[in-house]
Image (cartoon, rainbow, N blue to C red; front, side, top):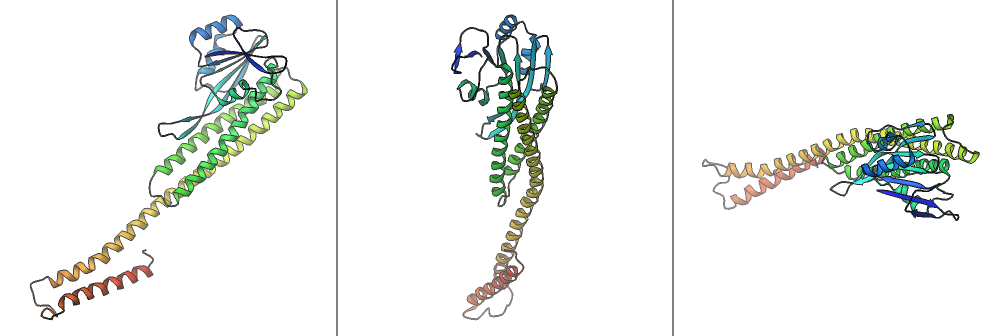
Length: 312
């Protein structure tokens, strides 16, 4: 998908049909024809357009003549077949050329919607350096937002695990832990790119741009610390609740064993009185009730013993 946007004099984003000076060329899962068309028009290396489409591409910044490529990993939330959110990261390519600004990504992302819906303040497509920094800032913001969502889901799963005897909750925690590992790795890679941008002269920055980049680095560092903290908490929680689940199963087995013993006592008494041998009270008029009373007394005594032993 290829879309072209341009900010008008009032700063409102408008969709265009043709590429013009100061426009934003937005590519989402582009076809080979679209890639070749943009390459030929902009005269940029084909690798600048194809590398961001590789899900395993690392974050980096490089320069080829007047063309600058910035690749960062952005967070993404998808849903599996059971409608359960899955948190992942994908590469985003930012290409800055002389006349326009290009973004390349394999999947659509809410970050782009904020720009296309005019929800970002002081956003102009022709301010290319600031546009790139605004994308990086929103990326760090979305990382923090998704980390808070993961924290809330962890709390919900923790409450369920207190009474659980199944592995479903543990698998949910495992998926969240994997997401945190992806987030931490991507955030650290992005941080390296931002530090390089701060120290190098790849992008021409004014004082406001410099301050914005420093804010981006701070937000990104906060996200790294939060992801690492949640990862440590989840790791310890999984170990603890694996033991909790085992203890819950042991308690149920202990309870069932106690019930089995209590029920077995009346069966034992009835077996004795069913034997074809002389037994006490067999000729008594109330022999049946005697067996019942003996069974009840034995069951009550056993129940009391188990109760004091905390088997229930």
